[in-house]
Structure formats: C-alpha cells, structure tokens
Amino acid sequence: MSAKRDFWLSCGHHLLDRGDDGRLVVSDEFLKAYLARPEMTPPPEACRAECGLHQELLGDPRQPIGPGRIGAIADADARENWELMISWRDHLARHVTLEAAYLAIVRQGLRFPHLFLNQLVQVILRNALDDCEDAFTLRAAELFFRPQQLASYQGSLMAADQEAASNLGTAAPSPLSLLLGRGSPEIDVLSETNASSYWQRSDLFDMALDLTAGRRGLAALGEVVERWVRHLLAVDVTVEEVTELRDVTLSWYVGLDAQATQIGDALWNGDELDRAARERVVGLYRLTFPAETQVLERARGAPTYLMTAMSIDQVIRLKPQNLVTGLPVVCDAGALN
Image (spheres, rainbow, N blue to C red):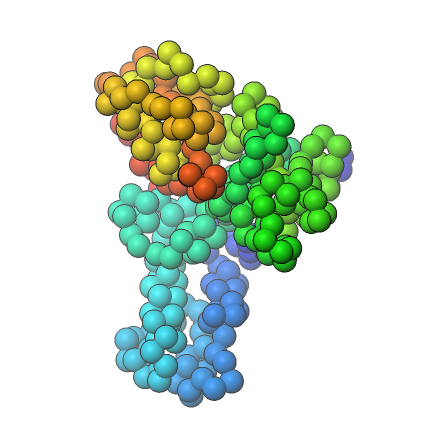
C-alpha cells in the first residue's frame, strides 16, 4: 500500500492534534505559528514592551495578556495588531476544536479579518479531505478559501487563483493569458495528464481549474460541499450538478457567494434574469438530505439548490459559512460546542 500523500503543508495542519472525533485540537505549536508571521514579529525599531510580549508568548502562547500589556506598546499600529492577535488566540483557545471555533464565528456573527477566517477554513478543509486522493477535489476546495479569477476560452470557463496570477509579474497581463500560460508558464490547467503534479505544487496555488458545466471541476466542487457539510454538521448530503438554470423551482436555496445570493434572491422573488445575470452563474447544484434529517417544513420533500456566480469582473469569492447558516436543517446532529 502506498503512503498517503500530503498537501497544503503551509496551513499548519501538522502542528495540530486530532481528538477522538477526528476534529482538530488547538496546540501550543499552532498558536506559536501565528506569532512567527511577519506582521507579528517585532521590527528592529520596536519598543521593549512589544519585544518582551512577543518573547514571552513564544514561551507560553496561552498566558493571559491584560490590556495594560498591549497598551504599553509605543506604536499604534502594533497595538492594534496585538489586540487583534490576542482576541483571535483567545477565541481559538476557548473552544475544544478548531471546528467548534469556526462554527461559533459563523453562528454568532463574530468579526475577524478575512485572512484569519480563510486560514481557518483551509486547515479545517485539510482535515475533512485528509483521505482524499483526487487532485480535482483538492483543487476545487481551494475555492473555499482563495478568490479565483475566471476567463472564457473557446467555450470553456477557466479559474486561476487570483493572488497567484497577480504575482506572476508579467506586464499588464490579461486573465486569459495567465490562465493559458502564455508568457507565464507557471500556470497550467489541471488535467488527467498533470494531476499527479498537484501534490508537489499544492502550496503554490498555481494550477487553473476548468469550471465548464458538465466537466470534472464543477463536479469536484460539489464533492467538496458534501465533505464540508458532513464534517461540520454530521449530515451526509448528496450534491449533484444541474447543468441548466431552467425549470428550477427554488423551494430552498443557498448562494455560495454574494453574487449567487443576489441572483437567487431575484429568482426567489419571481424576477426574470437577464442574459448578463444568467451568464454570471458558474455552478448550480441540487442538494438532497437523508430521509431521517429534520429540515424546515418549506424545504421538506424538495431539493435544496446551491448556486455560485462570478462578479462583473469575473471573480468568484465563495462564502463557505453560508452552508452552515443557510441550509434548512432544523437540528444540527453534529453541532459542535
């Protein structure tokens, strides 16, 4: 039997412990990794109070930090960074698992920087996908925590990591040239031929994904949704791609991003979508629950539809929290405390 292949090493999953339920338990090493980030490392000109605080937390990342310790830091920007860091640390540490910490953020509407939330989503997904051997599913999962730039080419819809594409350094590149690798050979479109290279490149986010309806990319995204819901809510949903936005009755729907939510709201209210709005829809899915799942009366006996759409500038920014707050589940059997 071949050894399990690793991926997304930079998310820090190897610094975390797993509980008996398979969920991620916060470790001191994981908390120290935040302190090692460039924005948390005191610069040479930092005051003694900031340097001392940083050094002490490296020794004991869970020690209580009163407001006076942060107030003693001379630089105002540094004080703001440390207030945010301690608030984030305290939130993670007060929950049994990272999954529970994430659910509390989503359900209570807590405000933290998008960067922190995306990192949390990534490491939770890394756990949920630990046994995954399919590069298409892993690449599709990147949409949960990294914005994607889309471009059309010969009837296909390609998605490239927005940050990776913008960092290639070419002069005024178009999204299409980046996706095709013209002048930028670092970006390849994921295919059966090169899928084996994903494992070595997973932390580079430098492979584009074909999101054309009916092809492997959108099906893989549906598989990620199934895994995410199962891991966080302990519900074994089935997600199937719907290739046409026709004759769809929205008994219940969840927009997977802000653009899709706007389109779903319009359909819910009986409005007709113009051609431009329809062309912005990237993926439509039919989600069904197991028969024993308790769902809201309005959604009972009918599929729940999921939708994702791109913005006018052809960017997708998924909001995986919508799958926690938007599904018509009456009681989360796997709700985390």
